[in-house]
Length: 92
Length: 149
Image 1 (cartoon, rainbow over the protein chains, first blue to last red):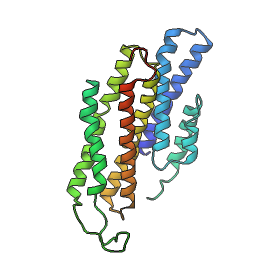
Image 2 (cartoon, each protein chain N blue to C red):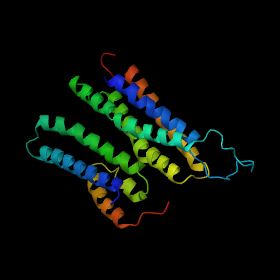
Image 3 (tube, chains in turn red, blue):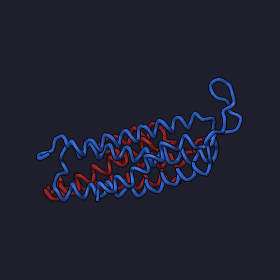
């Protein structure tokens, strides 16, 4: 797996975890400190995934666009990274 | 410390990415727009390699700048202010351009000299990179949306 894909995979997993924490918190106890702490973290992770997917080289348009979807972008990106890893790298 | 790191680390990286296309090697015998062979001029692989190293080394060191900046924003409780959000997005884009486009393209240019077209793209990316930093610096000074600016 290319370093770019590895980084994208790790970031998207973290993004998914952070959004899951936020949603579970919202649906159950709804603690304000949790939302205040994880909210900006999720924002930063979303931004990191979006920028990496948009600017990374040799990614398919599908991978780039689906990474921008709020909330579900992490799931899409994890799946798309698997798909990119199976695909042979385009000759440059 | 945030400002000092910005000057010392982002500055050299910005200069290095701007100069790289001028010194990067071009394949032998490639003509210019008028068909005449382009003179070697000041192109120098050694200088280009050094600029590539500066780009990478100071680019990594420049990570200190957003880290300290976010810590400052948290300590001062200004995380929600709009100029900080905008600056964070622009910084992320600039860092992405440097790490995901400029550095790999420089490596390619050193490994396999092209006909100069890719170097011009590199120059364009360097311009965008520097412009983003200029906007971020202006945001840091003007601070639109701040309560006590």
